Length: 100
Length: 173
Image 1 (cartoon, rainbow over the protein chains, first blue to last red):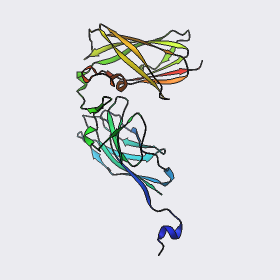
Image 2: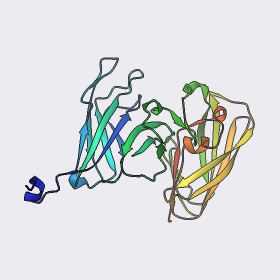
Image 3: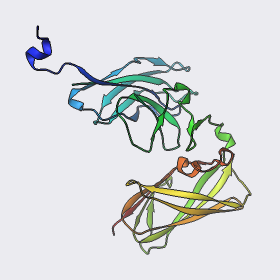
Image 4: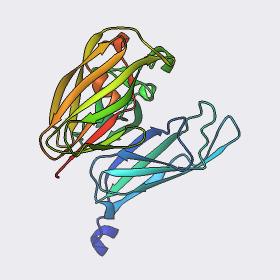
């Protein structure tokens, strides 16, 4: 019996998964953008997942994290309302999934 | 599977990557394992090492950049960027400071600069009573960069220095 991909012509399978852990340096200013290099992917067939949704600083600050694929080899991690108090340096876990 | 630790301009590892794709890029340091303990450590050209407190390392503090060309050069207020029309020779003056005091020491060290196309050149910086001087000729249109990691790459850990880094844009007149 044909599967979904064979019936409808889509690839459907996962071509590759890349995972990472990125530290946003303490002392960074608010609304901090960080570029992270990954192995080349096809942006049209790739999704980015943030596995860290929320983090809280020792000074009571909060950080909202956004990650987006901005080219075939770079994801940009955007930390909003990031506080530079203390030595707080949030770690962001993420994965990039490329479909075939 | 390939493992990399991406370093910033100061050689500090800030992003771990596990990827089926091989990457050939100077700031992507290949690792044999996915080791989160190396995040935040400094790449010394051979391995990652714990950072000493900033207060333990002297700073190279740029004070003046002078061009021998009649058109001079343009510098950003913090001296992190210089734009100069080639051909020109730029002379850099700096101080070696620890806790805001100039270190009264003599010596020399290598200053490697690298362009975006991968070309690399090396000049010697002299240190006289904590005053650092070196000069570099620019003969063609390129963007050159000097970072803390580049200065420290071939120095033993006990001689490492801090440096904010500088870019030189050699432009056509």
